[in-house]
Image (tube, rainbow, N blue to C red):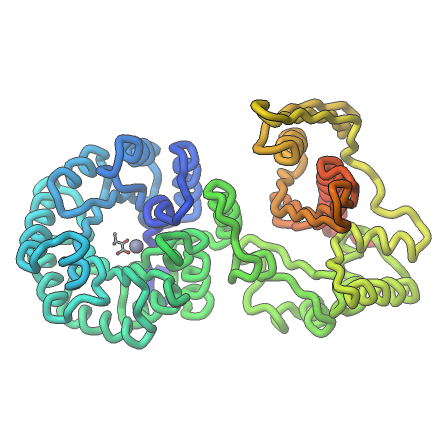
Length: 507
Ligand code: KIV
Ligand code: ZN
């Protein structure tokens, strides 16, 4: 280990197992393979790939992931039964993670077993796994609500039976940092095997509790991308890893620059969007609006950022709004190659504030349009991508389908797509065509009716994001929702391409 780090903390990622237990999430085999490959690139020590006994499909997933020959170790979850363990063994995994309830409430009401039955089941299962020469991590489920003397006893017996590591699940997330610290200190005082923490986020403390466990000597943390998992989820990998590195100065094997891409991939495949203000990977995590902040970060990023966005694969974003300062707006415009003079800049800022005071969200495209008006020039109107024509079909017993014809790169391109509705179909068709242009994807879609009635004017606000993490917002207002959506999308794509093209260019 490098001299500069005093400890190495192992990371077990359970996005594909506990993460998939997120209500409403269901990943296909291909999704799981893509996520496993990304987790491997990210550098996680262990990928918990699934629960083989739960279904034939799940068994296939774990087998296929194991066959990829990744650097990360592949782990399968199993109950303490021969049938479950055999299913895990059949997948040829490196590690089997077995669990059994140990709290009174779960022993009685979840599995209807006595403490003696739980003990013997755990010990026999560990011995069975070890007899097959496979590594075993044991979880006394609901450990943090388990009667202390029974918890100590089962951990000791599990160690004597040959486990390679012990996991301490805070199954219903009821610990606080002080109590989990004390629990880990106790277990560390008599156990020799490495210990993991598996913290759930029911009270929003999963990350804090995982870090407290590390302070008390935990060797490994169970995490999931974007904090996915049962109920309120597990500890978020991006938060745990970045804090370990930056705040504690501890090493993990994670390439932090891939954290954001990984978050985006998991969000898009799982369909669970990341809250805007989530640490590290939320849209606003490196966004600044108020004058004092934008001035500060452009002078010296450490004024209002604890880490550089690049460390986690992100870029800084300065946002135009009623609190915005001149400097922030100037930087935002310069980034897309627009250089107003001082008087023009003052006028632009004034107009942004007026709109903000009226409660209007100012999209990036609005800022450019407003700047064009102030500077008396047509700016940012260059249509790198232009719509030639489009058609949508929808109806009863008809799969909504759209075809679009766009021009870019001096050529015409045509694509058709189906969707859950006409807007979905048409936006998918556009993205199919523009996928190669900086991998721009729709990241947010908002529809509002400005007037009432069936002929209401609809306002569509979209956000698109490119592969560099640039996020650009645009709006369009029309009576036809499909046309408003297409116009906003093409507008956003053009502004994003413009931003990308001018990034780093100076006047
Ligand atoms: O939260 C939990 O207790 C679990 C077990 C399967 C370890 O996920
Ligand atoms: Zn769990």
